[in-house]
Structures are given as structure tokens and as C-alpha cells.
Length: 439
Image (cartoon, rainbow, N blue to C red; front, side, top):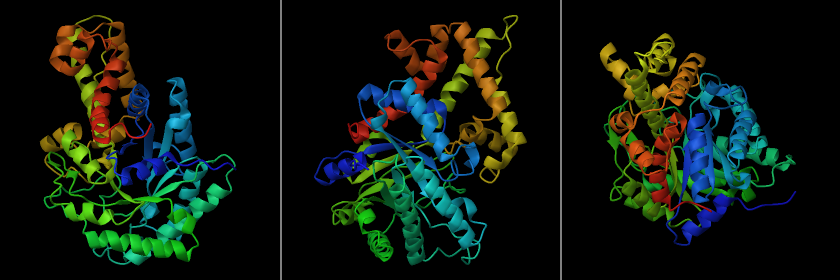
């Protein structure tokens, strides 16, 4: 087996040597988001990191119905179709651990987590977030956090599975790198708005690194420890249904200082969605080299398709022989009929719930775009606006940024291209912050 240095190791080395560069982590299974990300990376000739989350993709299919191997095939096929170099594509697994099986005893949950890890590694994922912070059914009260030493031990156990799977895989020629640390919102989003964001203490960072390294040594994972590249912490960045908590570098100064004591480790920041581009850039300068974004990308996707649905009604509602998509009504009906992805989060009056279902920053509507009926409506919308050219006056009204791009000749009136452009506008903000990442 030929060893190839992971591009992320190269990035971290450059960052630790003084280059304020980072890498955007695109966390989404939405096909339009993935396609937009591939096209954006191709445009800038840069590497692309796409991640799936433990509740989204697993050995049983997750909530998307997709296994790690299927997700890899989906992403790689899209990359090939768009002539994007496969060697510039990095797959990551987020929150890999017992998250999906917290209602089971720890032995059962950890066995499933180990099987999940093996599935991810054998599928060719090379950036792995080890997250064993979730309490299982026999781990005591939910009100008390899991003992950090137990978290470290379970993380090492999962890492050992990853290393053994990698060693036995003939197809993997690039050793995985690992992310440790768990001071983040739960996968899928937190229920409450965070009126008080608690920034991770520097001493907790030191404890996490110390305990995890000790556990790695216990399981003879010294070589894997050399590939631990980042710690996940809470730098005071978060968003709720209607509010965004902006990064304040003055409040996270201790975090910035403490990580400089570790020559091969940076930070990974979750929930960076909706931050101002200057603040994202500051985060990278302050050693948050990995910036995760997910809901903001599907939020932009939703904005685009909702705007197109309004254009469709204005343009085609009085034309004979045309069946409208009625996209807004269809997706809301499906959310009401199948409320499991939002009912625990939007516990308000129906009027407020209706608003949040559509427009919340937490974007729980993202779970419904793969629904067959919703997708049929979306495809009808795209068909209708492909067969009937969108007047520029309506584009100016509903999609002004895309209107100007069309006027300047860099975009067509094709509805799918308009959707991708809307998503790409968010990715460009991250490009500004990370200086394009690794080439």
C-alpha cells in the first residue's frame, strides 16, 4: 500500500507555520448543495471537503437512507460528471459515535458506533470526527455530562476500529486524520435558542487533548495521534431560529493562545453559518482552520426555490395547460403530515410554527427536500421555468443578485443554474475567509 500524505495534514502544517489559511467543510447531503460546492471548488481550482453526519448517513442509511459507500458514490459520480479532479475531493464523517443509539445501553450503542466507523473508513472517508460525548441509556442522568475520561476512552476505541479498517483496506491509500473534542451543539441542531453562549475554557481544551492522548497511548494508537489535527470547541458562535450569535475574538482570546502551544493541532468550528465574512476570516486567523457550514447552504437553496416558485405563480398561473408546482404549499403540507423533524424544535402557536417551518435559520425544512412528493414538485417547478423563460423584471424583483449576474452575462435564466448560483454566493463568503483553502 502506497502512503499518500493527507491534504489536511498539509493544510494544518501551513497554518501552524503562520499562514492564515483554512478549509470550508460543506456538511450537507442536498444534491444541489453538493453540486454547487463542486462547481465552486472547480472554479477556484481548490480542494473540496464534503462531510456527512452520523445521523444523516450510517451503515443503516441514516435519515437520508444513504450508507457511507452510497454517499461516496453519489459525490464521486457528481464530481466525475462535472469534470472535477477526484484527487481534490475529501470526504469527512462528523460526530461519529453512539449518537444515533443513545437510547440503548453503552455496549450495544458502541458496537453500532464501531460498525458505523468501519463503514465510513471502508468507504474512503479520510477526515473523522471522533465524538463519543453522547450519553447512552446506562450512563446515568442526562443532566450530568459524561465523564471526560470515558469520552476519551470511547473515542480511542472508535479510532482503533478506524485504524484497523484502514490497514485492512486495499483501496485506501490515504491515512485518515482525526478531529477530537465535543463542545458543540448536538447533531441536527439544538432545541433551544442559546441566550447565553458558553465559550469553551482553555483548561478544558488542555484536558481534552491530555485525556485523549492518554487513551490513544493505552490502545497503541501513537501513530494515529500524530494525525489528530483539530479540536472542536465552542468559540461563542451559534444561531437560533431568528438570531445569529456573532464571533467576538476578544472573548475567545484564551482559546487562541492555548492552541498555539500544540504544534500540530488547530481548531474546528461548528455552526459557523450566517456569520459575517470578516468574522469568519478572523476565526481562521485565530486558528479555527476548519469552518463547518450546512444549514446556511440549504437556507440559500430554499430562498432560491421559494423565489422561483413565486415567479412561477406570477408568470404562469393564468396560462392554460400548465400545472403549477405549488411548491410552497406542498412542502408545508408534507412538514405538517410528517412533523418528526421539526415538532420538538418549533413548539409555538401554529402561526409562529408556520413561519419557522419555512424561514428559520435552523432550516429544519432541509430534511424534507428528499421527500418524493416534495421533489416531484421541485422538478415540476424547474421544468415549468425551463420551458417558459423567466422575464428579467421578475428576476429583478425576486432574485436581484442573480438578475445582475444574468445581466452581466455570467449566468443564464436556467432555473437550476440560478439555484446553484444562490448557494455559491454563500460559498464565496467562506472562500474569502479561508483564502481558498488548499490547492
